[in-house]
Length: 165
Image (cartoon, rainbow, N blue to C red; front, side, top):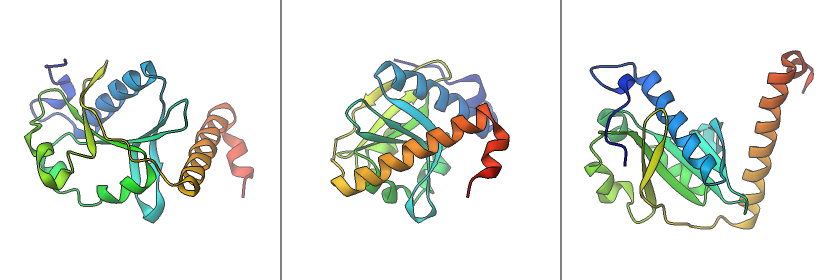
């Protein structure tokens, strides 16, 4: 288990860098479990997931990164994400106080918890799987695939993105 907070997350470090470090560690861990991840994924209703991943069976996972207690406690939009994934995780830096995530408001019977640094991550509470309805899974999977393909196109030929509708 990870027990040291990333350097970016201690002593008033930059929250954006801390979140990027957590995302990197979570992405590495998910890849080892055969889940392919993309960051900053727009969802229905104008929401945006920090990370979304898909496994070989087509199950969708959303990971919401929180690097401060204030950010965690002030986030009221996350329940909207549950309708776009089979499993939902909170990801926090090592050393983060996990006790609020055990509270009923954070649905511990539904949501999982991941602790991460910039190099790795560990699942400390597995998320409960709630299968998406088939039509929602299809819509979310197609959106995931198109988003990933568009991002790859942008890396290979950034000018090509100006040609699309």
